[in-house]
Length: 132
Image (cartoon, rainbow, N blue to C red; front, side):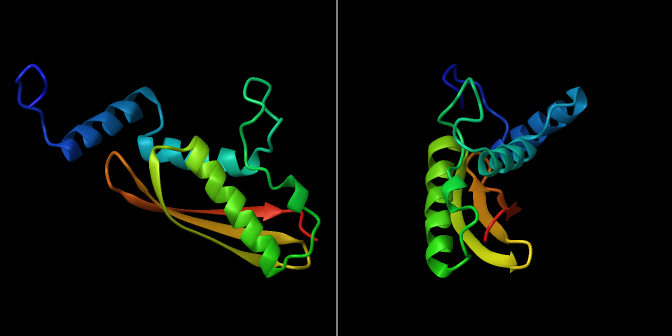
């Protein structure tokens, strides 16, 4: 029941209705919004957004460095901190990174998370280029 004493539909039904209404008006669902937010967070360096200069994931100092275990651990620490700070809609389950292609200096980052409001589990994979 809500504070006024009315019965509320089950949370999963409300979530489905909300997502259907979002699709109807062309807005992303909550899951899509979170996915887009995480991608933007990982690919935005602090200082790139004028309105929020502190926003982003500060991995710029790691770029052009050789991909070694210490670099990957530091990258994961920075990613976890950025997600914790800027994306409160999720519960972080795991973050992993591995060198993808040493020839082009790319790292594949995989993030496992659950959406706090629905409990839905999801994974995001992001390729980051520019390593040494």
